[in-house]
Length: 166
Ligand code: HEC
Image (tube, rainbow, N blue to C red; front, side, top):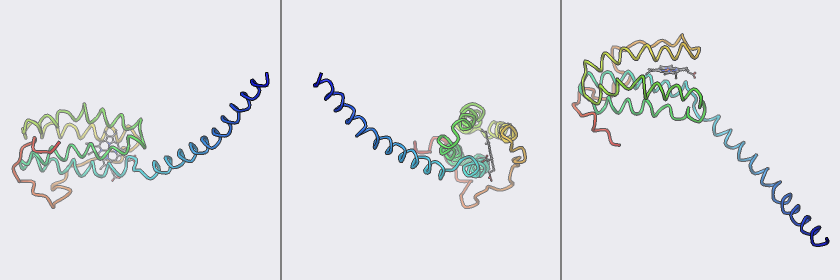
């Protein structure tokens, strides 16, 4: 009996002695994670990059700089990564947009086919706007620029879509 009581006391001390600070550490850790999360961009900041890279992609394809077009597409998608953490549900919509709706644009880039690219590019603009409207941002309606968003790149340099390092 005495042995049982001692074991009980020992186990309780062990549990309460170590669990309390463990819980406190977890709470601190959670607080740190939450504050890191709140400092990460949600949709608005990466969407600015999406917008610019999407415009630039067109001029790269038009100029035959297919490597640059593929690169713009790759990092247009990559720029949305913080939303995986900050807006996981909405990120899923972006993910399916990029992997499914946007796939024909990527296919035309891989095929280095400007005619197909232009057709798919123009079509996808409606889907970009459709998501904006669906998420309550119908006032963000895209229009094609007459020049790239970033004029400091040579869009006419000839390259292959496969030139983008993995
Ligand atoms: C999954 C839904 C979704 C898709 C798909 C989407 N957007 Fe957006 N976009 C948004 C939301 C939501 C905002 C408003 C920002 C916010 O909620 O924080 C936005 C904002 C923008 C903005 C304004 C950014 C600013 O603050 O200046 C641009 C530009 C933009 N999107 C471009 C595009 C382009 C180009 C495409 C297609 C290639 C696209 N978006 C596809 C959801 C989407």
